[in-house]
Length: 244
Length: 386
Image (cartoon, rainbow over all chains, first blue to last red; front, side, top):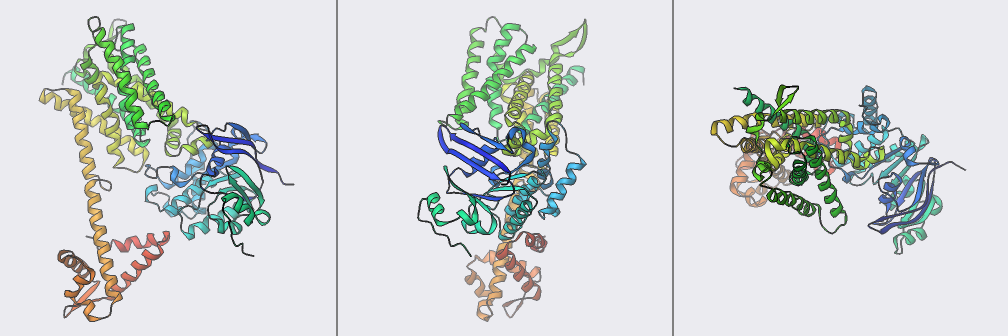
């Protein structure tokens, strides 16, 4: 049995006392590339944010490699939804990627040459090196998403959480991103992605969690990605043709 | 210039710098109105402090005023969090309430205390040099200069120490949290600095105009740069420039210093708003005009490329075919001709080789719209400019 990278016990999260996640129990094994799927309002982003301590759950606990998140920050990288930040902020692509190194620096200490070098390498990996000096509002949606990915890569984490990284990106960027995610998995990292496009789940991911306020199912895509679970999650009689 | 004049300008400049720094972050966090709220609601803190110490420059007064500033922020956030009213409504509810408490306290005790509403609202910069700080019988300068100096020094130390944290939590709160930088600490730190600075600036420019010193320089700088550090430096420069120029305007016109400084700030922002190279109104209008011409030209060229029939390409028919006003049609025709994209023979328009290539490329760009292509195309698209 593989090691468990993320373990969630009895997690309940509420906005203004209205639960959006009910009693979630979830174990994510190390080294999987996992999609979290579910309808709008299912609590997919909420689940990620609760794991990362951005939202405070009203019950339950989360552990990263058997320890609370606060002690394991260095192991975790996070790619928020692209729309969650103001892209008119006066900063460059390189500077945004550098922000990924802030966690390892801690308070007060400034980033130096070492951090810059790491950021440039990450930019190169996502094919954005020529744009390093560009103001972030001058980038296309796909380029902005790549910058976010580079910022996560520079954290050199063991577990990556990504909130809809394919939202609003063109086909080329989507392929580029998924290739990088597959590389991360190959390197033994655990990658957890909030995902919308059910058609691509079997092609992109090897592990999947169905979520709709409660956890519906979790496991290998080949075993559990079926019409039964889709119907349970999306409420209607759902059919996807899974390519053989 | 006499020493009092120098001192006034020095105080005004330090106030401007101390305001521009937190102001920059308030603007970036879209919290400009919070500074308005703070500047008003510190009044009860000042009044209570003044009752206790009978000294407008006492540290206790500054601490109390800063606390009422923080109280404002906490109350606004609390009311907003209930979800019953929006943030701007919450601000509009909280600060007049606190301000009015201060006004009532002043009015109630008007006979006993030397503190009037005018001074609170508009400041008394002209009188600042009269209140000296005496240490061991030695005159070391005006008290307000020392107060704002110390506040500025603390602000600068905090800025240098926590620049990275301020930046990341302003840009991406979620990332800041996940990295372990508590955005709440940064937020309340910034609010504290804003409150303390507001109290320190009170003497110089009063409660209403301090908002202008916080917001206008930062708003102007925002239009001029895409680099946070440069934005901070520009804000500081704009603040100091307006403070000194405003002082001399007041001197020449024999009018309120605070009023002149703020008017200068307003005019400075107006200038930047109009003339900023890429984000200014005029630049934006020019760019839109160029874009319109660009789109018209491509539409026109595409029409030519799609139609081989002579009647479709006749000068007189073109107008009705693409349904344009005469002026616009003529302009586009001239633009295409000037760039050697077309040639006209017997009033029939056809694409040149350059025109053909350009049109194909343009269509390719519009259809694929891939990142890499945009980069190559940009040069081509601006070919016919100028």
